[in-house]
Image (cartoon, rainbow, N blue to C red):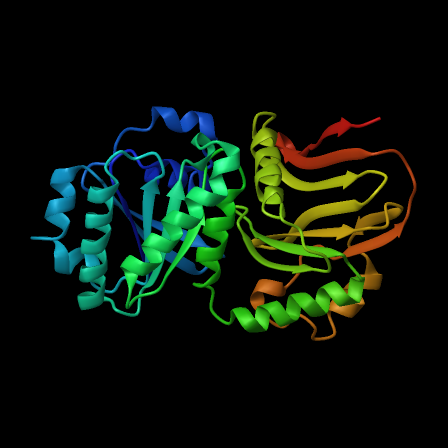
Length: 331
């Protein structure tokens, strides 16, 4: 079991981000969440058999002092990942840094192999032309303060894909045999000649693996869009199953890949048509290409030429097994 410690001062946004990623909240609904009292434990099942032992630590001053005194050994022992959240607009930056330094001291003594992540949160509140500068300044300060430990910093907001970027990167480091999985996905992408292949964890839609022919600075936006569509399906009493996006520049398809993942395939040829359960691809996949359990596909994909106007179509299975189609069409 992987122990993940989520810390930061009260009101920094810890519980909101946890609820969005792991409890299917949308950003506007996090306003009704109450402050965390002391430590809230949750066991999050990820990719089927990977369990994250997530400790969401309340950030009120009395609790913080207690963590570093009477609860120090209990909280900071056997930590695999420390995620420390900073409110970018905090007016008590010196105190925030003091508590972060206390966390680092406790980690050094109890879990010196732990990976450290700092999230500079609520970046949407900063003027857009100032975001890069402010983030770099905070990042430099935190990296200097963290020595001899190393920390990785992310800018985040619950209102855009930066939250999924950060958490995808964190969870990636907890996946066993990840290099083998990357090699398998690369092989798969080459076989179908895809421009992009992304593998999402099924419950959270975090990107766990990806293969790109071209740099895509907005690749984590696909997590947000796909998950929001999945949540929209539930309003129609339908479970999300697949989605197709097509316009004059590209064609994309997302579908169940294994019992714990979705796969998204993106092709620069917009005439490509995607079909599930194709023997053409099934034969290729079954020849020991994808040997790990994570890559035991439920529905292989076939691409065929098909022109047409831009469209987005998703399918879910509603009550009584009835297929429900939900679509938006673009001119």
